[in-house]
Length: 285
Image (cartoon, rainbow, N blue to C red; front, top):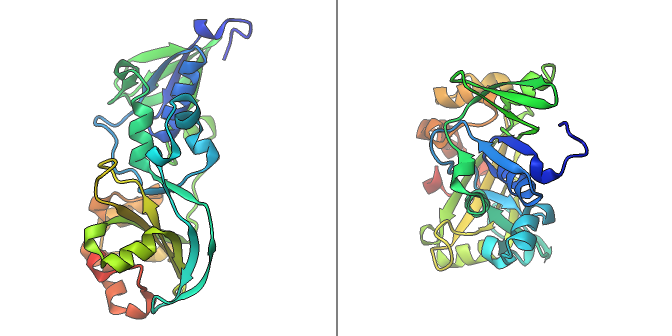
């Protein structure tokens, strides 16, 4: 970024990537006075890029302090930190004050605070080039843009990061995480109530599972939902043997879209019920 003595209102910024991190950077810079544009490579509005998120102060700060939203409007609370065994019996619990939100909740609310013409879909960045005191943003379609500041917020497999830090590569951590949500109508009322009031853990061999409440995508008054995550250890060479080609191909990209997770992928879990728990219903897989 150049022009160290220039007023912020005279500067322009381009944010590469229009998910939660990019949107947060964009609205903060816009409020500071910069002329901000977000470039998102997806041609359609982002959705379903994640389920539940533990809400930290920094995550909620903009929406609460700048946009005037209440925590209740963007999150759900849990009053218990709880462990259960394979039978569903509570083995440990203690009071807690955790709050949880959802990717969709953060995304839609942050996006609503940015003018539509400043959020550009279908804009894939190919390269960044320093040009004097400006940065040229070269697009995949051959066009280019210039700005005083460029913020790279284009995700875990960031093309911008590969260009700026070519020696940095992702490394498989040794486990997979199956994520999803379950609606209140899909569970026994008593089971849903017990799970909705807590962040609940269970620890089968070589894995652990947790569930917690998150805001409904339909907003206040809509059917309540739970987020669940099932972490399972898996050797990297086993990923190439998965019944889901899309999932295997996605291993190098760190995540797989829902369409890549065919039912066949979960058949081994059904055959080994001892590894499951009350948090994981066979109906979900």
